[in-house]
Amino acid sequence: MTGIDAALAGGRTACLEHMAACEAAGLQWTEEPVTEILLSRTSPRVRFATFTRKQEAKVGADWLWWWVAPSGESFGMIVQAKRLYVDKAKWSFKFNHNSGEQRRALFDAAAALDVAPVYSLYLGTQHYRGAATCGAESHNSEDCANCATLAVSLMPALLADSHLVVDAESTYQRSVALETAFDNAEEQSAWLGAISADLTDDLSAFLHMPQVGVRAIARTLVDRVLDVRQGQFSKSVKEMVQLDQTGRVFSDLPGDYGHFGAPYMSLMLRGLVRSPPDYVVSIIAGDTLGEPPADNIAGVVIVRSS
Ligand SMILES: [Zn+2]
Image (cartoon, rainbow, N blue to C red; front, side):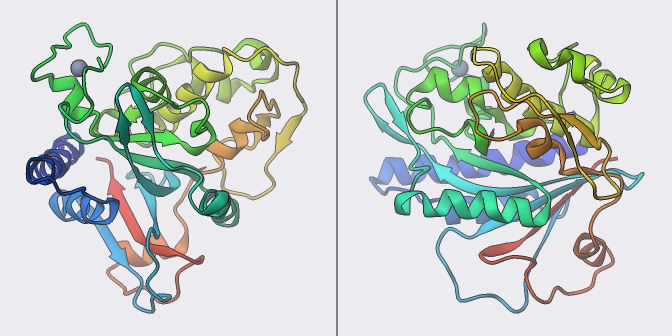
């Protein structure tokens, strides 16, 4: 484990303790306190800053997460927290809260800020999740270590479809434990099918070789999308998408839509840049933050990989 893995695991453990205490007391826990516990308990290894001039306090404000390597290479994502609701074997997350307005706002903010839209899923205790198995060989029905790590998971927002994320299996297929996002042992992304011919050499290498640190986060999330794309059979738009902004790690990306309704590679990988944006540099330098870069952003989280 690197220091970051351990810090994130510690934060997740504290979240799980809170969720367990609430469940034992018959209190339904909510997203915001869990986020506060996650951030406060991973601090100072994980840094965060809130905006001094906050918009009127809105429930469910998103956080901007930036993973920053020593070289400056960075991956940005905008993160909205969603708790799990369990009804026997049926799972749900209220992704379409407020008639889908919250979800649209997440995608709009991600586009405006050039980051990947992501949900952080708070899954509660293994007991809360019922008899569901995490699918790991080591799974046990009483006290499964892998189920525990999944209590705080990340899901690319493209995959957060209320009609398709309906149980444990579909949730786990489409998400990854936050603390394991730096692990990227998979030799190759699950599916490269129709986009193989469209890959530039550097993008092909990124998708064919295990990645570390900041690039591993991006690869891990892209892999989840490709894994789902594998199950879709439609012919879809396949032009290249050129991201014109300078500073991208990958600027020529396959334009494949799959069933997602958007060119998923650019939606995810626009967040991977050679240097972080100014507001991240300001936080690292210890300056206070002024105006949020978009509406309804609670603050910025910075994870620096060694
Ligand atoms: Zn398990």
